[in-house]
Image: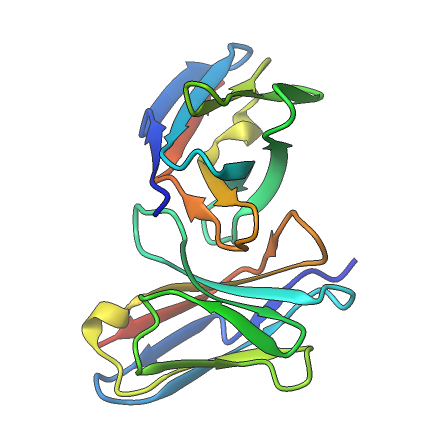
Length: 112
Length: 111
């Protein structure tokens, strides 16, 4: 089955810097890659997603890139703010399956 | 906009007891999912409903676990004869096409 690896497990940046989180997946049939932000005591919140027919997608300060050949995708957050501090999860799913396989998460801390 | 709601938010139970959790999805969403999350891990898929039909189940869903969505609206997840290893956050999510919206979760502690 699908396996998703996520790095780094923790990331600390200064306010205003950029943050990059990387994920790799194992199943070449996977075609949908969402990113979730989870704050303490809350459920994960979808922040951006990308499908395998697209190489890059951007939404204000957040962007996601996908390299199908290498089977990896990345989350980029620019001009980080303290409210970006949270745990971020990447996930992957195959067409025809509704199951999302999640990475283990990255705890992002943005220092003021 | 009413999001996914889950009740209760917290449940403490003794080993061997049965527990039931409820999930109310976003009203126009026909797809409903249950995930389990333990500390320091990402959510793990348990099961998926489209309307009232349970279409996919994980091997994690042992015979002590049962999920229902009788009228294609709310769903319940029951755990029978709870074990300490069942302690986790149980998350419900819903969607209409892609892009799942998660609820706040039910935190289960088995003592």
